[in-house]
Image (cartoon, rainbow, N blue to C red; front, side, top):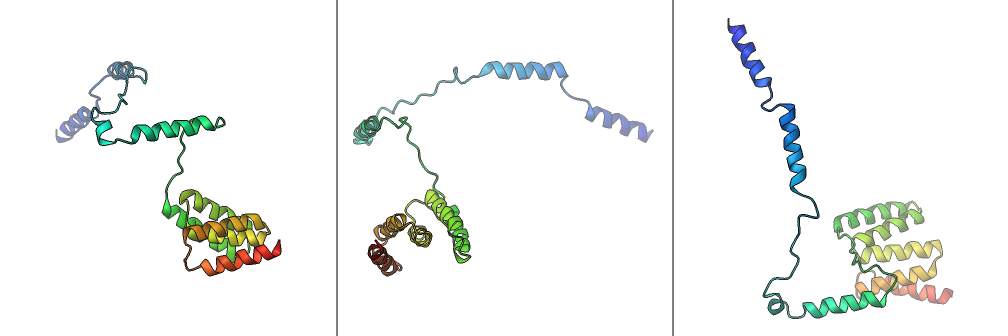
Length: 171
């Protein structure tokens, strides 16, 4: 008797609440409710925007003028992702390659670090060192200069100045 009751309860729990046709009807209703053309988003500025942000209209106009001056660009402002932790990891891996004298691989990792954290002094300096080791003196000079712009009195500033002098004498 107890087995019969348990079997009945078990079967009742397994039976679906809705039939397959009910589920299909729900899905059709959902697909008809929204589409990207029907869902309009209001992107107009708030009423007090001009008062709260007085220079924003000029900044947008300046941006639009810059884009018009560069016909090769599509007018889309593109931002690089900001990920200092990824940049730090790329520097670490670049150092690994540098110690093993695989300068080409190190260059790629230092460039990737600069992609994720533009203006990183350490990546700039180490990239310059790699470029110098690979014989690309112009790129090495560029990245040593970049390091000195970021940290003119930084811990590696003397080394950067010495490298720039060395590169100037080599030309």
